[in-house]
Length: 519
Image 1 (cartoon, helix red, strand yellow):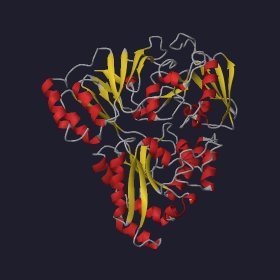
Image 2 (cartoon, rainbow, N blue to C red):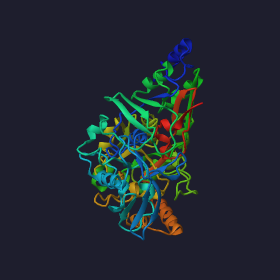
Image 3 (spheres, helix red, strand yellow):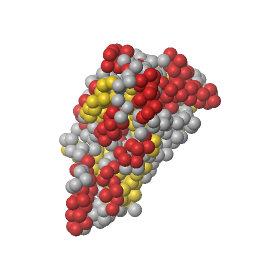
Image 4 (cartoon, helix red, strand yellow):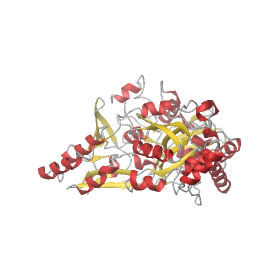
């Protein structure tokens, strides 16, 4: 919502007494969300889709609000030599349609993941290194791998398990309409109203801790202003992705509480060094130019101004607590004078012209950050034409292996808490067949970095593995193809009668009715 309109809405809400109103029903929760959901949990890998689907489906493993790996549909797991993990399944679990959960459902679901038709962003990376899903008995499954994969139990967290029986002859569209969206999760789908609303009801036979709310309604409100207005008018009880410029005003509104926290998502400027970019990318292949760009970035200023004080400066594409985090790493200091000298040394004393491509509305303050970065580059003579695009257009423009943007701004979230996940996706050279480097949009390719990443993904010794992760991370950061800016904050707002646990893990950005509690 615009700054000009919001105070009027606040005044109206206070005058009408709506801000102190109770939720629609003592056992009901209405959530205003930003993104249109996909209820096929294996189609279109996005955090927002995982957020919706965590209500409906279960997975073998799960991460809690603090990022710890915990059991879900599997009660335990252990290596079987160097080429398999054995998962013991939970007994007595039923799907929403009453059918029993068994190993057959696990085999069916994990085999389905890489085979969903016309999938623009598949979940197949979660099965990296997996060669076979093998049923041992009705409550035991072996996941066979190509060498030892220490990350596997975390890799498959949130990889939803479907009912083989319910999915017979069903498609992604059947799931999106609610007809086949059947899982073992804490809520079952009761109604889907196009791209506008989803209605859930509590699954009373859920095997885990039952949520507080009997009924949950997701109201899809892509506009920031519409979400804020809906909360102030009492149409919803909780909203996500609160605009940072509105958070302080909402916090002062009668009966409204703002919930904020950190996330493992780091926003960064990507520098495209892919040789296929030809003349447009020539300056970017000079390490002095990349260092100059990094020194032009006022990261502290971005946190103070663009983020309104939320978030914090990032030193790497990762956050403290992640295995492999480089504790002693510091970002390049903000120094425009030194940056201009580096450009002159590289043969660009008057700077150069390029383009900076960014998403608009996909991440917190993404368009505002993009404009600010463009202005910072202009101060050292790099004249970057700034393009802010809808998310679907943006990701098509910077797709891995065919990125046409010399500079781009995006973000990455390490949902596993292990640097191997980030290094594999962002820094490993792109290899479509091996599912490596799937988000390497910078075109970075370095044989030694690849060697360390490959070894780390299969190293069983914790000490040697940590050394490999940190070595690859240090080498990647020294290349300056990814220039971290800040960790992205998570800000929600609710009625005063609701307490919300933002959490500290990758799931912090995944709005969940299970984290909302009546006070």
